[in-house]
Length: 384
Image (cartoon, rainbow, N blue to C red; front, top):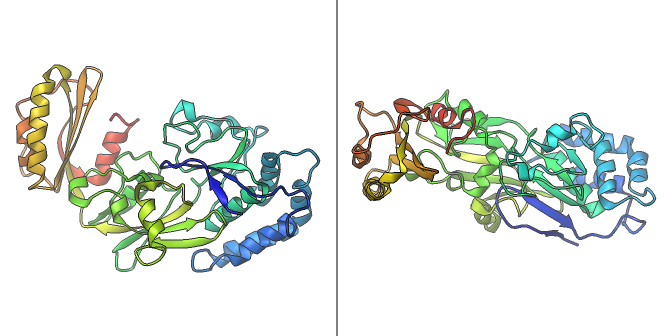
């Protein structure tokens, strides 16, 4: 039977496996099913060493795995957690762990800090495939979390009815030999990615909040230079995806094209993305300016913003953020490259009539880099 996905919104995934109970009706023992899954993983996606280590661990712990799955009176989630603790011991957390509260409170929104029955932390694609096999074998609910910035309950979190698969430990950044693409593991945060590319004369397209996980790309990914490059999702060459049956595939313009299309903004309801391959773009330097304006000037400001937007249609190096919050407007202006003078770049000239409020949000026009912009707008917490 297939896995039945419950939610269909970006950046998180919660599901329940519509499979039979393990009580003697499985075609083979859980340990054998896990070994079979590991051995089927393609070496083109998964390191042979990762597979052999998993197979060895499962075979050595077969009796414990099979015993954990048939405990009298155990719930499905209890079975899943018992197997997960044996098969994926690194980073395993449950209510008996000293760091349980810390792990379940990582999520950015307090409403998403839910008491998962247990947390497993795969370190690579092979371990994600095994985690998926555990939840499908036991028919248990689960959720997937990268950095945990979705503000909706059970989006990247789950209560005691399910297992939380935390992929934040899947790390790695690999630049292609021709420097045209960057392979990004989904455990990286935007800060990790932009800090890496800051050493070169190019970047890859991500969101602007350094603390957010790279999984934000699945929701679109709004960059500091969106008019110039498009969204982060527009700049993905390939998604490496673990499907609900634990197979691992590439979704791109040539293979699994339908999945490639829906992952661009569709979230990870269609599988667990373990790696992105992102196109590099020839941008490094960025001019930016942050300030607040009084809300009382909203009529004049909105008229000016309309003109700025028209200007951007002929100069797409400019982008901006304007957010009404409380009694102020938060303004962030960005321009690809360096501004030659101390004034605003030409597309933003309609905004020169407004006098910024003197507060801690103000940052004068600055010639810097995309990485430094992300750090400025994100630290210590995202302001806008």
